[in-house]
Image (cartoon, rainbow, N blue to C red; front, side, top):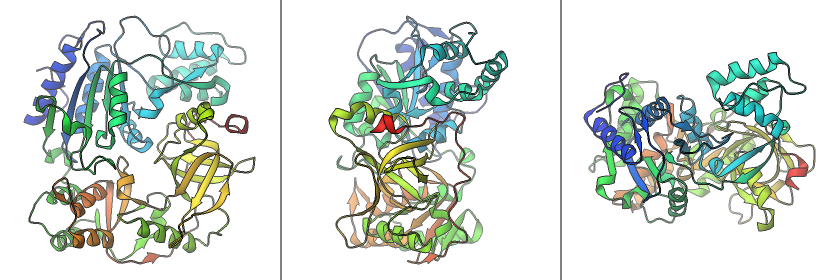
Length: 510
């Protein structure tokens, strides 16, 4: 077993490591001696590594990424690929959402979204020379308007950040200077690691199998299945020999009271009342768990309240806006939004690609920064995106309790559609994590009282598991239907643009 030397594997992690190593070896990537064979045409291979929160899935993914990179496998990102070399082996690390990808990037893993890998940027030929040089595929170029010192700054940045757009920005360029458009990927890739794969639907899974001959899914079987899949996940249907399940590793979970609560939900005898008693006890011992008597509106601007019922979501959003005295006919800078898809006719396929490639995919979390230069346009910060600040034609829908149609205070004729993001359903929160998470417990009590079951487990337990494992640092279990007044106005100055800001101009979107 050629395991990494910098950490000790548990027994089930070691078994998963061996199984995945064997899979890669059969695909021509031998980690034991760094021998890379040319990719060969053949039957696709899929493996799933499953485990609940704290079981070490992300740790294994990160260590395999490092081992593959050390063996000479090229890491494919969403910002630049360069010229494809014959017989070169590649790895792409993907997640379904911007936030899920950003969680991996914060751990040093160069992840991007599934949407982002489907569309590749088209670089201006002059600046492509710089990208090739940074990626080790060409000589240092001479570019009119850029000094040697600027290029050296780009080189130093790239050695630690591995971002071509970021390096070019350090050299003094904007995204619109060097990216001229986007195109749909033409050629298949090689090895794909997919995090948060419990969120995949069957169509996405089939698309990924077409792109990646070797596909590895990392997922949590205790999450909520995608809507319309009868409680099942794509890895449920794989043969048993292609699935590895990990147990919780306590030393890696850092004795987290949040994970203790999540894993307690597996007890079939645990009632909702008993679980709330556990939360109350945990809150008395550890400040990472809070038994809250009200929703904190200050937290809602950056991390939504997680609810089960749509009616609860709409009421909390209206209460949040009222607390900030937001006018009904416009948005305040700093209000959170959730992308609800792209509303464009089929003939505007290129414009759809532009928007999705910039992170405006369904479910993306966005903060409104202010109106754009043209009516109907919004300046936006896409949370978790590598290049977060964009300007886009927007259709913002503010839902009103007991009204079938939302009020639309701000709209272009077509473009990216948004719902308010101060509260979201637990289903839509999957794949995301926040430092602080508020869970609206009265909704889960209703689910428990209804006695609904999903995939053989009480629905309230599945909802509770997903909701509380969204919290990275602190969990607020809100037990009363009350909202605290905000202590300050909404702000945007905490949202910093990435080194390279890609701007969607009015000419691009209209």
